[in-house]
Image (tube, rainbow, N blue to C red; front, side, top):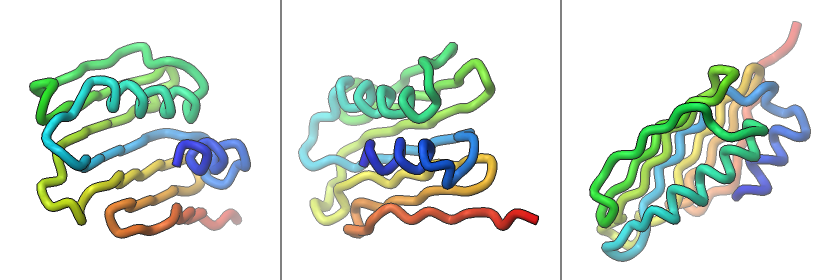
Length: 120
């Protein structure tokens, strides 16, 4: 998934990255900090730097959420929680750019879909 996100940015298919919403439902009960940290590392690759502000919330066991803002105003909302129903496990990721968007719903077994805004 990380290569698809970074690839969409590097290929210019979405324009300048502006926002990532990453919701992930994981198998099992424990949701560790490392899952959110790994997702943030991928967002750092998408935005080309580390965030200037971030706030984590959650109990560190069942739920973790991170809100991050980069110096250019781009932002990310990353949230991990148990799936409950194993069939619902997987990431749901939306990457919005200045001229397109990328969507992925891992729980549905889909592949990344890129929508581009028409240029005049």
